[in-house]
Length: 191
Image (cartoon, rainbow, N blue to C red; front, top):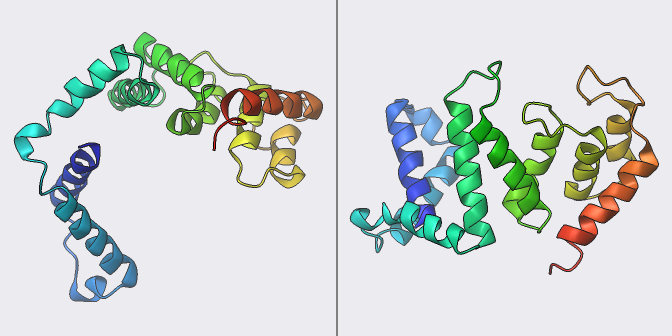
């Protein structure tokens, strides 16, 4: 049902932006591939009647209240995205956005892959009052498909840290130790 809702949203976005393609565009392999996957998804969604699609919110809310981590993540991401889409980036984050970010960080520690993908973004900025240069660098290391010195070093050197953090302000050993704690908590036991 979520895939079908995403499909509807994607088609709606394409139609609303009026992305008319020229004949030459339609010949591009990446355009043909996208059209193919949209058609496959339409076929997969044909057994999900449009009137059933609003059930997504109800089902996800019930599942989240029952403690399902995936549903909790879905609702937290939805809340964060909703709160942030209503603001300009320079505006301060709302209390609801801060609560959603905090919940996502907690869910990331359980190994939820979607929440984990938000963990770095949440801790690399003080927008949600969760800024922590060691934590953000550790998440970057954990999320990396190939953790190595090349990936870690720029974060430790301060090149990619926010401008208000002096370069070299993060201790490499602390980051590696924190990354190990995060990995043991969220990922070590997962298949």
